Length: 268
Image (cartoon, rainbow, N blue to C red):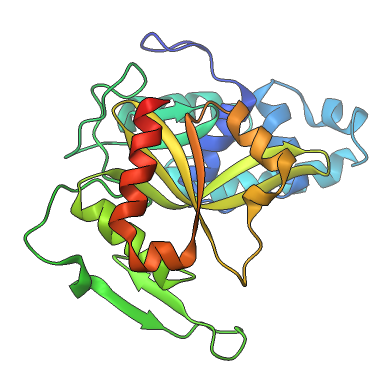
């Protein structure tokens, strides 16, 4: 399937779009099988022949999946028309893909520079791309206690985003004040030696046509970048810079952290 100069979408790219539309409500293993095989034009019988699931079960999973997707896409979705539905969605919303990850939808207000981003504007709930605002971003900050959290644990809410630490809020405020395009709590779906995993990183940042990941090293939270396999996988996805900063430095000197990150990103 080709449209407006784009190459045919792969099953990975289509899956990324579908999960984005579903507000990152991740598909389970069987849903992913049904979606991928349907994208490839396989029948339920053919799916059953190459999996451990019988045809009736796959049909039942598919029925619920298409119903859920229909609600999110705003039109009837079924196995036979999923490609057409996503094609229409792409043409209407101008989705930008980066290595099977959604990086922009219906941009308005910020101009991204570079072959992959030029001509799009960013204004979607998972992204921040405003310029320097006259109102302080502090006015949008509040701290709330989450449910089912250990005592003294807090979630910090800022501009509709939830963070695990004040350090993350400080970085978000600094990026916002400088008009930098970024996506907090960014999910990456990676294939590791242990199988497919969805990992959440603190910040995906865009600048002059380049993208990088900024991770905050919190003492009480396992740092994904400490795992060599994960770090290598991220670099292979095409991100120009992946850097880790101590939480204390992010809290006390967020401007220094952001300046350092952007310097490395621009030099990459």
